[in-house]
Image 1 (cartoon, rainbow, N blue to C red):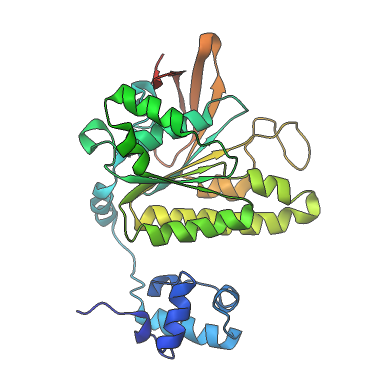
Image 2 (cartoon, rainbow, N blue to C red):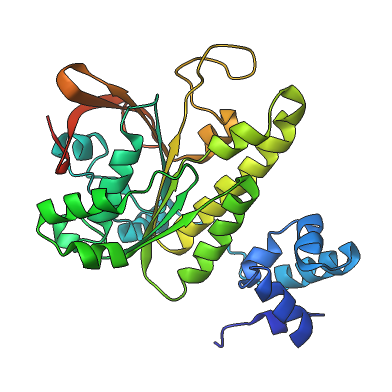
Length: 314
């Protein structure tokens, strides 16, 4: 059976199809599940026209039905694991970071969130037999923390060509929250041309926290953050990718930010992230990773170290 294109949606001609594609709506399913207001604003269409296109897309899309647990188990055989570089850390996650999921790494300043991300970026370029994904990597850098020199150190220690590793890591600086959201759309376009099985967002919430200040801005912040998280999850599903995001914790307990060890973003981030890992400093230069939330793994801790060569067992 021939694959349906956007032009197969009733009421969508070549001009509107081009408009939809330019706005990032390349799949019929993405249009079928869009909101009329969002589609109308993004594609500069009337809301009535957007509603008609969405209804037409629902007719064309293979919405699917219920599956048995056995079917889902079979499909989950495509899930792969990405090593952290530490056996203890990998064991905490039953083999490493899981594809088709969002892994949130949160902690205070100096808890090595960015260092773990550097190591994941290097590891993802490795062959699968070495715990990697044999993949390119996309990094959305919102705090100007990416350092190629650190990538070179880690790649050299692993015995791989640092120049090749750097060529497989694609970095974009996010200058504000809206730019950060748009970069995920750009990453989805890139993933059509390159194999990308790891996306890193470092940090997820820093722009949102700086731009939406006070209770009056909370609802708008959470709405945009919610869309951003679901875009990331969609990237993970479509590309069988790992999404690793870093997050800050509240500097002090108050009614707006909550518990000082609680990550920013509230329930929106908490419910959308598949795995939540709290990183903190230990004694003698050690770091502790605590698995806070997971759909299938028990809470637990792993001890590791950050050395000049990268992430290692303590």
